Amino acid sequence: MTVIDISRLSTQERLELIGELCDSLEAEDLPLSDELKAELDRRDASFAEDCARAIPWSDVRAKLRRG
Image: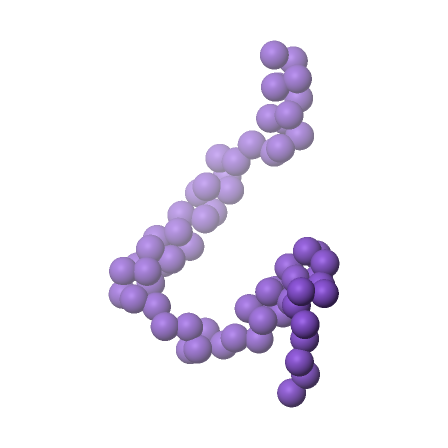
């Protein structure tokens, strides 16, 4: 086992470590309540619809700059 002194890591290195830790988990390792599972399913189902209505950031930024 490798021991890491996280106090010596930069913010970016810590974020990368968090990502690696999350990626190392299997779905069955994460206990989810029935309520959370239902919410995740709802969000997944609405994802395509939400994406279709999304406005690209470049458009939003241009509109804000125009005032």
